Image (cartoon, rainbow over all chains, first blue to last red; front, side, top):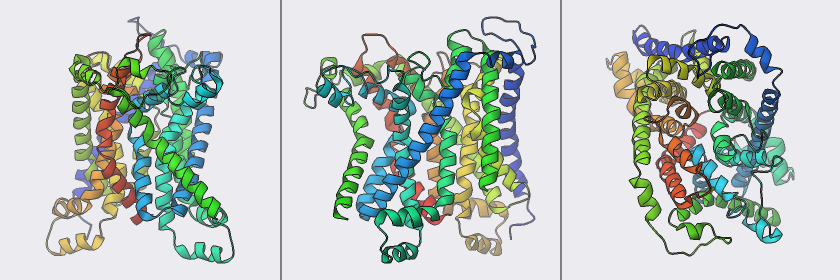
Length: 286
Length: 269
């Protein structure tokens, strides 16, 4: 039936060639720029080999950015999965179909918001003097509550917004996944006097292991896109407490010094690390 | 058990409240005058004003940003449809020995850190003379829309029952006619979901737009973020109004996307 036709060629060749050009040109060019000493303010440039990369490893701000990025990745991925699984199970366990659909709609709202909007909405909510989220604390302590300008809490406040967007979306997905499970094993466990949470922890969730791992994989990729949240909420501050790799690359390339090549060498390292890690993870999961 | 139920319901109600309240609060603030916003106790009752909304809609920069967003978003989503859907159909129905690699390649485009793409593109567009031009933005966004559309449309086409397409072949339809007249209409609902997803993704995109534009081609997220960076005398009401304007278009797709999620996760796997 689906044989001997020109369709696969006609449909695939243009799309794949355009995708190849659009993705390879910038990636190759990123490496080329990283080997030069380009600056936005100067017209000339020359090739300097791996000097940028060598400089990076003695740059304390870069090492800090690596640490912040890793912390961000771990915190947001783990928190998202915990929130999603607990909310998903609660939805599955306690709600009727109509109520569940209603909650599912509500839970989709945060992820649809532009990150800039989400960031602003919460930045204002966490405002030390007028914010609605800090209001209860202000009433109790009678003092302004500085969460975003405190280097110990700032990253977690921004991570909270990320989890607010993704954890709720994933809760909806988890409840849909739980609905697809055959009911017999769960009922059998209940007959054996397993408690509600035991049924989920030992029966339902292990059955969903593969899709949950895929979800985690998706979240790991999406967590790399933290830039807009951090840019609007803290700009990497206070100090460099929330400066992730992309924020630092942006600062080096655009705001402070216009060192495009230096920024690009950072971006190339990031690219190599993520492509290698995710390819390995993906091939293993398959 | 009873206690668990109460705790569970309380937990869910709190999460539901948390999901929508911040946006509702922003919407409320958009209708407040500055004095009502910067009060120590949150005000739920106030005299509403349309000043903020009128100011935002009357601002030249906001209108330019809105037009730019609509043009950049619309064009790149359209390119995504035209190039993405046929490719997805071909991968779904005519698997060959590169299909798995192709699918992985399309996915791996999402692994690329946005900064790693944005920095070289900025240099390239500067050299070509298209920096701060909508064309540059559309071309860059097309990489995203095409790959997302392909990725999400493959399962949509796979869910079309094979028998319908085979029956059409028996009736003498050619391969292209089967795609146009059978596969596309049957998969239409799921495909709308995939397209809505790519629209929301581009509408919300920030980093590329920030790095590839400086004045003429700025999109709405950039304009909104600039408003929020103003100094001490922040016009909070105006800010809330512009965030509201930015947030409404994606919410328009809430129903479609929720249906899309249901169809993906209940029929598939």
